[in-house]
Length: 277
Length: 222
Image (cartoon, rainbow over all chains, first blue to last red; front, side):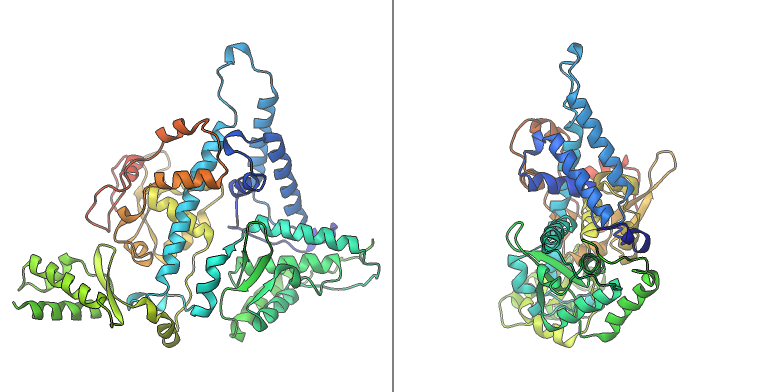
C-alpha cells in the first residue's frame, strides 16, 4: 500500500475499539497468561497494529499512542536491573493488568446486556413499540447461536492475510483506475441484497488491484460502523462472514448512506498511480 | 371488592398503561381494594397468562408489571408492527454496563475504565434516555455524574439494578477471557472488588448499587 491513500481518504472510526481492546485481543491471540504478559512480544505486535491501522488510514486515536508509550515504559522498566533496595518493587506490569481485567469485567457485563437485549427483541410492549427492532426471525435467531461478532482487529488480521496472499499473485497488468469507497459500498450492499451472508474473502473476489482491495476493505469498515452490516466468525480465528444487519430492501436507505459519503471523498483516487509491482 | 373484579380491573390497567405499573401505582388507582388483595390478584392474573394458550404475558420490569406479547408470537407481531431499529453498539453496551455498575460516575471515570474517549457514546445514551445526569461530583470542576434510568431497566427488562449479577461474578469470566492462568495477583485484586451489587433496594428508579454510593460520596440523588 502506498502513500497515495493518505492524502485522499481517512476512515473515521470514532468509537470502534480502543487500546485496551487491542491489548486484550493480542493477549488472547497469543494465548499468553495475563498475569505474566511477555511484554516485548506484545509491544512489538501492538506497534505492528498501529502501523497497519495508519497504513489503512484508520484514524488512530491519541489513546493508542499514549498506550504505546506506556507499554514502552513498562518494557524499559523490566529491562532495568533491579536496585537492591527496591528488590520488593512492584511488577511494572501490575497496574496495566489490573486495568485490563477491570475493563474485561465490564465487557462481560456488556455481553450480558447484549443477551438481554436480544432476548427482549421477541417481546413487544405497547410503549416500546416504536423503538423496537424490527428484525424478523430469519435474520437473527439461528445464526446467532453459532457465530460471534468479530471486532476490528480480527478484520484487520483477515485483511492482512488476504492482502499478503494477493500480493503474491503479482498483478502485472497496469490499470489506471478510479476506485471510490462509495462504489464499493454500493457493491457490497448489492451483493448482500442477493445473499444474506458473504464470506469475507469473497467480497474481494472481484478486486484486482491493491487499491481495489484497500478501498473495498474501507467500504466494509464504513458499513460496519454504520451498523448496516455485521461481521461474524464461527470458531475462533476461523473464516469471517459478512451479514446484513438491517433489511436492505429499502432503496432510500441505501442511497442515504451513499450520498452521505460522496462529498467527503469525491477526490479519492485522483493522485493515484498505476500499481507497480 | 370481588377478586374476579380486581383481576379484571388490573388487566385493563396493564393493557392501557404505557409503562410498567408498580403495585404502588395500581393501589393508588384501585383505592377500593387492599394492597394485599391487589398483589394476589396480580399473581393470579400472571399465572393465568402463564398457564398457556394466551398471546400475552405479565412480566416484572423496572419495579412494576407490564403486559407484553408472548415470545413465541414474535415473528407474527413483527410482521404487523413496523418498528424503527434501535440497536446498541458494543461501545454503547460497554459504557452502559460501566454506568450501571458504577453509578453515579463522571465521564472521565468512564474514559479511564474504557481507555478511550466516551463523550460521543455518553451523548448517544443520554439521547436514548438510558442514562441521565444525576448531579455533580464534589471535586474541582464539579463534573456531571451519570446514572441509569428507568428506561434502561425497561429496555433490558430488568426488575431492578439488583437483578444484575454482581461484578465479581464476571471476574472469573474476565480472567478466563483474558487468558489468566496464574494466581500471581488474584488475591490483591479481590480487595478492590466491589461488594454487594445485590444489595436490597426496593425502588427501582433510584436503585443504586452499594458500590455506587461509595463512589459518589453518597450525596447525590437525581
